[in-house]
Image (cartoon, rainbow, N blue to C red; front, side):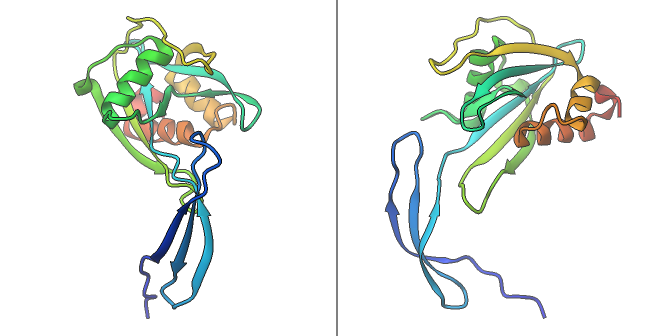
Length: 189
């Protein structure tokens, strides 16, 4: 017999956010078995976009930057939070131009799908896109908290960096692996 899996019923929601930079909600929920949990906390961080941009020579454009929560300098795909009053596509295009100086058009982006990093404690979906024939045709427009080094490397080398654990941020890893599965010739698979 299959379990009867249903959504929990939200009885109450309280915003207990310490700041606009880190939203936190407290829910009182009723589980499907009738049990009431009065302190279920999670963070509705907002959605994220990432772009796996490939140059005409099939080099992947990467960013290296410091991430304070981990205290690490990480290698990732360019991207960021969905911007207020902007679509996912427009946010992806804006982040690509702001972080690495690549200006592109909406019809050039091809979806790589979506992923959720921690659906138990965060309400955040990362949407990935691939861009072919990316060109450095604009200037970086970094936020005050950003100090980004832009790198390019051949797609097979990027895939190897995932295998070797040098690229280990979840969303970047996932979209590189998805792209390698969808475009094996480019990634040398």
